[in-house]
Amino acid sequence: MNKGFGLVVLVAAVLLSACSDGVPHVEDPHHPVDADGNPIKGSEFLMKYCAGKSHNETCAKVATAVSADSTKGEMPKGW
Image (tube, rainbow, N blue to C red; front, side, top):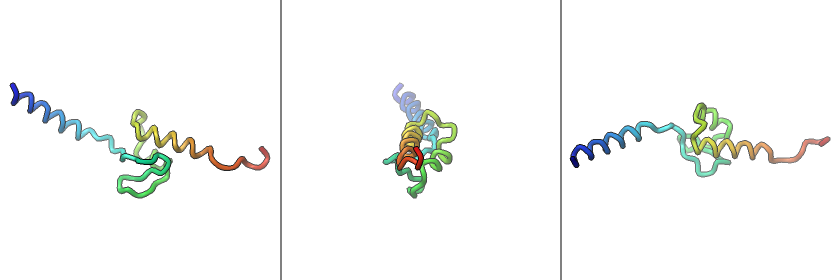
């Protein structure tokens, strides 16, 4: 019984580790980095790593940061 359970746990762990979504972890969503640790623009990060991954927590944080950052700055003249 214990041997069978251990085998099931091992197989589950291997399968779950193989199901990585390929999105690098980002410490600061306002300053994302690529898989090599190099700085990358938020919009480029979203296109490269988040296409079709709407439920990924990192992608959601970076998308929110990109949206917030796009509203910063001075108002255009004439407003």
